[in-house]
Image (cartoon, rainbow, N blue to C red; front, side, top):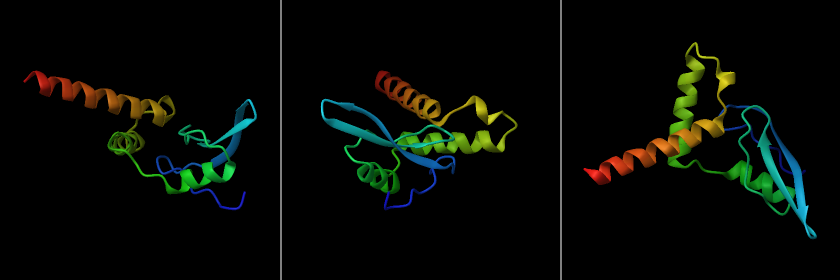
Length: 105
């Protein structure tokens, strides 16, 4: 691994590059946060996965989810009950619900 992995942008946790599986003669790699579980899409090389991890940008849903995660961190709610993927999914569902309600109006 040539390039050093940046910390997770969502929880600050340590990340790890890992081989996931192969199909035919094609191998796939990801980088995954060891704390919150967020991960990159599958890449054909470890270097590609690391570059994707280190240069990613946040979607609007991910930005909203990070705001929610920050609120959870600052509250007395046990953060271990929540993982970032679940909060992103919740943000996406809330956005779709809001859009459908606005379309009905």
